[in-house]
Length: 173
Ligand SMILES: Cc1cc2nc3c(=O)[nH]c(=O)nc-3n(C[C@H](O)[C@H](O)[C@H](O)COP(=O)(O)O)c2cc1C
Image 1 (cartoon, rainbow, N blue to C red):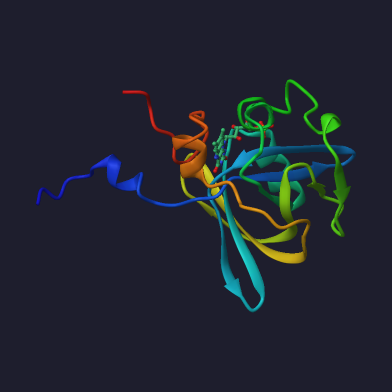
Image 2 (cartoon, rainbow, N blue to C red; image 1 turned 180 degrees about the vertical axis):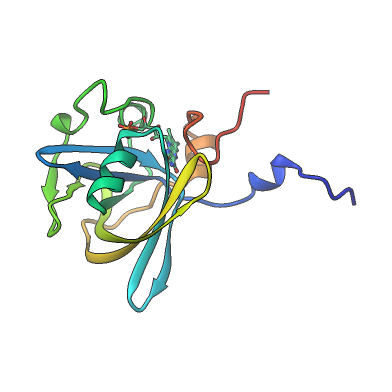
């Protein structure tokens, strides 16, 4: 076995797809995220990996709160396109969706979401192009039952792509 780095080995890792949301003063924004996971149960803590170029990153860095919506399998590609390929710097993404403000004031996106949660940032690890934010969950709710959208389903069945700002970006061969 040749032990150099084979990028294809990373394609075997599993992820979900989420909307990561944030606020700054009266402005709300959010983005598609696949690198999110629960890291502890007592207390409930999450980790999310966010690109330093994203507007959502700026809002989280400044205000230390974020929301997470777990997307369902039937989430339309147009919705993912808006939240994952467009920046809140050029458009108001939030005006086209239903959302509810959480305890922290962060917007929780309700459309195509199976569950929502909000966290206060308790730690940040600079990993280069991205920052891994550790959040302590202050509220979480199941909105409906259903199948969650996985990154594998998004790629294999929906034939979806990701931009270079995604931590798991694959350049076209
Ligand atoms: C399938 C998919 C997965 C993505 N995963 C991440 C991710 O885990 N972390 C990240 O920072 N950006 C990720 N992105 C990219 C952001 O959603 C994208 O850069 C977005 O336009 C940023 O918006 P903003 O500038 O309004 O914050 C992903 C995009 C797609 C389509």
